Amino acid sequence: MNTTRQITLKFVLCMCFVTSVCAYGQKLKPHVNSKDWYGYVDETGKEIIPFKYDYVKDFSDGLAKVECNYNDFGYIDETGKEVIPCPCKYDKGRDFSEGLAPVEGGNDWGYIDKTGKEIIPLKYTAAGDFSEGLAGVRNFDREWGFIDKTGKEIIPHKYDDASDFSEGLAPVKFNGKWGFIDKTGKEIIPYKYDEVRFPYGEVPGFLEGLSPVKLNEKWGCIDKTGKIIIPIRYEYIERFSEGLVAVKLNGKYGFVDMNGKEIIPFKYDNAHGFSEGLVSVELNGKWGFVDRTGREVIPFKYNYAANFTEGLAQVSNFKYSGFVDKTGKVVIPLKYEEVEDFTDGLAWVTLNNKKYCIDKSGEMYRLLTSEVDVNIPATDSKNDKTFAVIIANENYQSESTVLYAKNDGETFKKYCIQTLGIPAINVHYQPDAMLNQIRDEINWLKQVAEAYNGEANIIFYYAGHGIPDENSKNSYLLPVDGYGTDITTGYKLDDLYQILGNLPVRSVTLFMDACFSGAGRDGQMLTQARGVRVTAKSGAPSGNMVVFSSSQGDETSFPYKEKGHGLFTYFLLKKLQETKGEVTLGELGDYVTTQVGQQSILVNRKSQTPTVTTSATMGDSWKELKLK
Image (tube, rainbow, N blue to C red; front, top):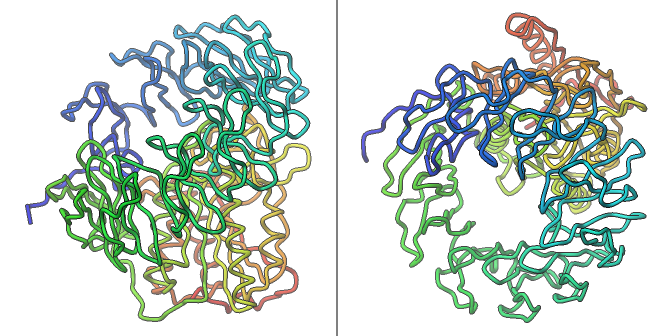
């Protein structure tokens, strides 16, 4: 094996920039140095824009959003000039599109141009991106309409929801149903559909002349006249890829073309979308690859296979993963605990609990890690009646990034499998989960509980933003496609408690590394841009439920930058590491509460007080329970 070369970057921050630190495929890419400062490098890794920001984003429309002082932001051009200085006068902002960027101040949204001039006044409760000359905006009556780049109302405010124009049409929701309008506001496709986006929440609208639609729990596709092209009869539909669509019928996957004609028979247990002429599919519990005719190209012999990227595809057996080429030849051995797809010639892998980048020859580049990310205790015991859902929301579409959330989720997953002895198939990990994905995972837990008839144990872990309803003070989990100003885009915490608390299971343990005051890990306000925090209701657990919360009241759940984790999650992992998972919930609660409280005062000079809440029926019996 080639000699490893150390890259002096913190493990987690590198993880946040797979295509940025590991591979320089564009002219300028975000990069983070060993002191946790962000800047930009060119394709050779040379520093082009100095490392002086708290966080930076990719360039969009010639400018990039940069963050400073945690709560502030501005925009730079590709020379590094701050064309809109950081800090600017606004509380929040998004990327530029068609020359304008949505910005928020005092809970109101408007638009600025590339000089920072306010072109459209801040008078909306929500604002979309400009697309095809128009942008959707929401007024104070919570009705959506569309404006042009001068701020003139082109389509009146009357819709429940709206999304961007695509191929001349925009999806809008009216009286609870979705349809499509043109740029004059004329109804082109009637309001009758339950959904007009792919099941896992991609931006709705037309792609290659077709849009997915959902009606009465069935999926299909329509064209821009509203004509049904792919019949609305399928249980699931994948995103279009290379002219074919994976659909599910009677529990089996097959492929149809863009006219709805069956191309590959419905016989597979699972399927992805086509990539580079091949697609990974599952048959009788094993994964392989077929071509566009359905011909088997790579045998069905793997426990999992991902799609091809850059000529290679990740494949896995029971324990390890590697890469094959399009002939099925193993070009990088199946020896890694985890692998990620290649991007610009490099990929992430994990070997002996250490994170590396490899190139296509297998040469490795070592990255430094926190102590809880390595030496993860292993157990021989089998915890096969425990099931875990892990949601790690880091990269939000419209809100600030939650630093280290993905590393929190990925590392907690490893502890579930290696330390608690939960079979990998029992652990569902969803990074950057959209609302439909969160719902899907909760439905999976309901199915598990019913199948195991009272014998199952449930673990639910969440790292990401939480938001409060300013009126009712109810708390909500925020999916990555949600808005901090719109509780209807979140998942109500009380609903989660009610669903999980009513499951016929032995125990339900929740770990919530999120605060519900309206602030993010970076201290930036989500729902109260004026800086007024909300003391949200903590919710009432029911059934056999124990809830570990990272903070209480109007506190912030902080990151632990030196360790690359959320402060709460770091000490949760630390206790599992020290005890090899042999810890009672009572001991775990006492440890996390004490350590987080002390460390937050030392590092952040602010209080963060974890809490443990249980259902009234449990009394003190929860304190003796264990996770394994």
